[in-house]
Length: 384
Ligand SMILES: Cc1cc2nc3c(=O)[nH]c(=O)nc-3n(C[C@H](O)[C@H](O)[C@H](O)COP(=O)(O)OP(=O)(O)OC[C@H]3O[C@@H](n4cnc5c(N)ncnc54)[C@H](O)[C@@H]3O)c2cc1C
Image 1: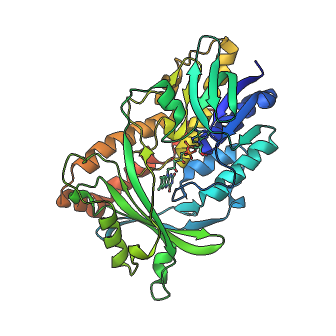
Image 2 (image 1 turned 180 degrees about the horizontal axis):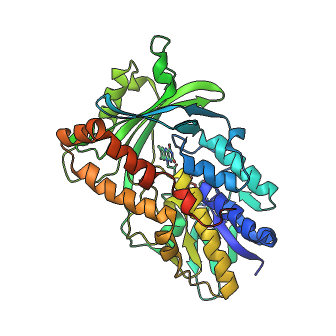
Image 3 (image 1 turned 30 degrees about the vertical axis):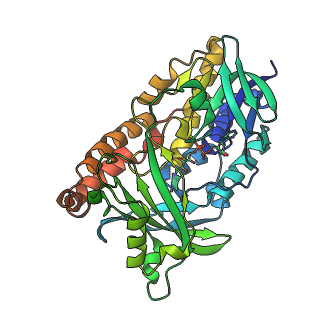
């Protein structure tokens, strides 16, 4: 069998898995193949907000994300109906925003420079594991590998092939790109806003409004996220509250192109592997509170690489320790806490509770965010 490790999907989770594998054992590079259905630089719907943990994991790989075009927001606001909590991080930006076509292309280039082959324009159709290996059917023929990493995102074929009947928790998300704020409102341009005003209307999520850039031009990225936790109640279509929020700030949603994509989110019951196949990134689950998944995708790569390397040492590929490894890691801990917080803040949907949370309990919210939501990458393996 020529290919030892076949990685399906060349987004941040697949590329991170490959880069961490060769960090553990550089001799593996010629034995890894990544299949990606698109051609870089490919479009990926995403607001591109990078939190500190994404930067930490990339730094440990010796990568400097400042090489990618980006906008830094010094402030983040967590609001309910326009008023709430301002977050600044001492001596650094609060959030860095990239565009995914540029970020993923850059990470793919770094992966190739490290000696790993990425085959673009190959769409995986089915993944069939057996006792001795895995057969992967694609539109370019069949591949056979010792093990497979399913890094093909929220709608991935790998997960659907190995867990055809599992329940899937997905959020619905819409995104719109607009020009920057006009000159009379320049202060908003530096801030990344989250507003939870749609929660009492049974949208278990928030609207966002981030600074970004497209081809070097300063722009805003707007969107709305709904975990679907309140899907049993009457709720407005997602477009209405997004249009309302944009109108409050002088933008007319109907003038812009709206794009949508689901995000599969983490629940403690999500499965992550079968013998010879393990899942990473959105294929297992992103953060349910915000739908934040880039840092998580990079973190899943660390854990998958460690699991694979140890499996080779043991000479068995059941991957039955992978979920335990995830649950015990900094990533698993933050995902669990975020899942728990999601169940609380979105199901207690009353206006008074949301006001209490975002406007009055500031010190508690900041403490929980700093200790349980961010900084999990410091509790991950492969630190140096
Ligand atoms: C609207 C929106 C806004 C978001 N905003 C943010 C944000 O601001 N910050 C943040 O951290 N996260 C955000 N996310 C989440 C983030 O985009 C994902 O969590 C992240 O992309 C997951 O990475 P991944 O590598 O697991 O999957 P993906 O990035 O989806 O990569 C999967 C890759 O697999 C390829 N692929 C898929 N199917 C096949 C196939 N059959 N054969 C071969 N290749 C295949 C795809 O082309 C893709 O390159 C947002 C998501 C959405 C939808």
